[in-house]
Structure formats: C-alpha cells, structure tokens
Length: 494
Ligand SMILES: NC(=O)c1ccc[n+]([C@@H]2O[C@H](COP(=O)([O-])OP(=O)(O)OC[C@H]3O[C@@H](n4cnc5c(N)ncnc54)[C@H](O)[C@@H]3O)[C@@H](O)[C@H]2O)c1
Image 1 (cartoon, protein in one colour):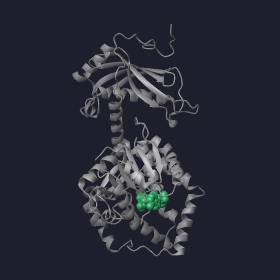
Image 2 (cartoon, rainbow, N blue to C red):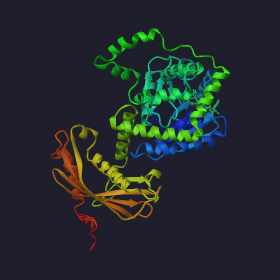
Image 3 (cartoon, rainbow, N blue to C red):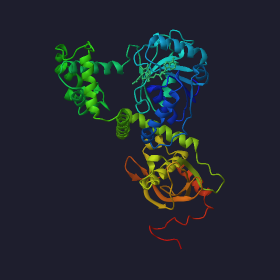
Image 4 (cartoon, protein in one colour):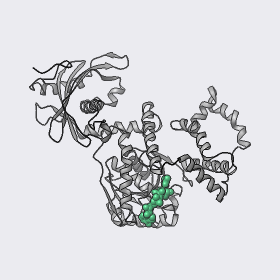
C-alpha cells in the first residue's frame, strides 16, 4: 500500500469528524468531503472540540499536525487521497452508489473503507471498481479517543487490503480487530445490541429506570470490562478451575432463560420512558458538557491501563514507543558543527503544560529534559531492546536551574553537552532554549548510572554504547565547562 499522507473522508458528520481529529493529531493530512457545504464549519469545530482531550492522551513527541481541507467535490477528494474512509448515513443503496463513484476516481492502490455499523462488506463492494481494495473499518464514538476499529473483508477483499489497513490504523494509534467472518453488525454492535435489547425490555416492563440500569453497569461490570472482557472475567469467576466450573455452575441458568432475544416494540410509552430517563440522568448538562466529561475520563482510564500494559493501555504504550522512535529517528542528534552541543529536541509548549501563571509548569521542565535525554539514548542504541535485555541508565542526580519562562504555544529546543563518561556513569548538561529568541530558560545537570536491572545493581554499559557516548564526549572536549555545572542549589555565580 502507498504511504498514507492524506486521508480522504466521505461524509463529515459525527464519525467523519472523529476520524479527522484522530488523523490530524497523529500527523496525517485530511481532505474532508461532504455534500453539504455547511459541514466545513462543523468539522472544523469537531476537530477543535476533540483537541483538548487528545492533547492530554500522551506526552510522547508528536509529528507536526496534519492539515485539514474541505470540499464538496467528492471526486476531487477521491483523486487526492491515499486512503479513503466513508462515513455517510447507514443506507445500503446510498453507500453502494457513493462507494462505486468514489472507486472510479481513486487510484487502484488506494484503500477504501466504510465506517458502517452493521452492513456487510460483500454488499457494500458490489458496484465498486477494484473491490479487492475495499473493507469495512468500523470505529467507535469518539473515534479520536477509542482505539478499537473492526476490520471486515467481503468476498472480493484481498488479505493485503486488511493487512495494509491494519497498518495504517495502528499508525494513528488504533487497535485493529480483524473480524474473520462477515456477519451483520460485526462483533461489537451485536454484543452492544444484546445488552440494549435487554435494557429496553426491563424499562418497558417497568422493572428499572434507565439510570438504575446504567448504575448496574458502571459500579460493577463496566469497571471490569475496561481491561478484561466477559470471557476472561467469567474464567476468573469460576475460581481455581476457571471457565469449566463457571459453565457447570451458571450454565443451567441459560436454559431458564433470564434474557429475551426479540427486542420489545418501540411504543410511544417506551420511547418516552427512555427519553425521560436519560434526561433525568443528564441532570441539565448539555450534550457538549457530557462529551467533555466522557472524553476526560476516557483519557484518564487509558493512562491508568497503560501502567498495566493491558487493553487500550497497551495500545497507547505501543503507540508511544513508536512516537519516541520516530522522534529519535527524525531528530537524530546531529552536532550542527563538530564541537557544538547536540540539538536533541524541538517541542512546542502545549496548553496543558502551563500552570496558573500561564507559564510552563515546574514538572514539565523535567519532562522536556527527559524526552530530550530519550532522544540521546535512542541515538546511541539505548532502546526497548536494550532495556528488555536488562540494561538501563538510572538517574542518580538532577539539578534543574530555572532562568526564564515559556508560554503555551512557544517553541522550545534542548541541547546537550556530555561532560563525562566512564564505564558506569554518564554526566550530562542540558540547556533548554526558547525558540523565538534563543533565550536560555533552564539548564539541567544530570548524573546517570548504568545498571543491570535484573539484579538492580550498577554494572558497566555495553562497550558499543559506551564507545558512542565517548565519541560525543571527545567531540565536546573543547567546549567550556558550563558555569552552572557543579553548582549547589542557591549558589550564586562569581
Ligand atoms: N454515530 C456513531 O456512533 C457511529 C459509530 C460507528 C459507526 N457509525 C457509522 O458511521 C456512518 C456515519 O454515521 P454518523 O453518525 O457520522 O452520521 P451523520 O449523520 O452524523 O453524518 C453523515 C454525513 O454524511 C453526509 N452525507 C450524506 N450523504 C452524502 C453523500 N452522498 N456524499 C457525501 N456526504 C454525504 C451528511 O451530510 C452528513 O454530514 C454510518 O454508517 C454509521 O453507521 C456511526
């Protein structure tokens, strides 16, 4: 598949807007096409609304944001895009017609995917040119925060299309789930609908309100579901003998049965109960307010799960590893000239990095110096593989001196001077500059100790790593000793 620099969107409603925000955030340009010209303002608003939560998702170095353009000319979009995602209303004849049209204008190696919630790919690809490059890629709202995307091929889809699409979705931070057999509703919506059907019955029969039914999930199973699905959780419910015991114990209930397969009739009374129930739950809060609250906790949950490397947290962790790798490769520290400090990192102060004085917060200085150090480490070969082999540098001392301020949106850059290297120690001096006037706004003097992490003891660095650090040190040997280096806290310059 061609490299996806530009994502084309067909239909820019709720889901199109979500795709745009996610792709732009991870550095992909977006050309959005909709029949209604007024959707341009809407999609720009949707992208702006998604930004605060997306910006908090990770502090790993991001590529420059993608550019958003809008058109009502669907053919122009199809000609320019490297990957097309269709997000128009859920009507089979409309989707068939539009997918057919788009496929006639897109180059043959451009993948075309549909966000359909439940239509099957074989039906959708019927009228397309080169239908082998078509698949269903079903996302979840909000697309910019939920990593799941179900990938489903139709009769004419080739495996290469599924693989290439999975690669692109992973690149923009998602978890592609290959649905191996096409079934209406794919996997997740079938499960969601089963639960929803039961909710409608319980409300219809006056057993519980919408609020009570939501409580029955959010204080219990919902918390488990974020990291372990029903099957693994039931395996745990069976005690030491796991799923086998669980099935023996609760299997007979399936015959009673507790639940119904047919949905109840959507009568006016049932609709009123559902609407009034959810309005009471919203308690006067607007949809926008509730969306912001949802986005905030979705970010927080993923960050917690990242610590356990499980579920969506594992996806986030893998994404961050890649972002750090890309940043290291893109900004591999090259001394501008021999004998100059290494320029390690260029960043822009993000809005959530500033404190109540609207200046870069204390702890973010540490983060920026840490990210810069990571670039240096990766450039000499200290990466995941090195750490996985049980070797790492640990921080033993860190003295940050604050000399100036930076506001949100200001570009910054970090340079580093290697002061000393021996078999176990690395003595480093970093400088943080403000991009607009090159002013030095902070320095950090740091001492790192190489350790064997399996025995948690100091140990010599790999000779190849040491040689690379030594070479930088020798390149820096002619640089003057920084006046701040070695100075205790509060000690003034003489
Ligand atoms: N809303 C969800 O939670 C959700 C989740 C996953 C998948 N989906 C699927 O995504 C698709 C879009 O859903 P949505 O909720 O974003 O709908 P939406 O109504 O918010 O947006 C649809 C957009 O398509 C545009 N459109 C209509 N006909 C068009 C055409 N011929 N050419 C170009 N644009 C056209 C409309 O102007 C509108 O902006 C559906 O297939 C839906 O099943 C929705």
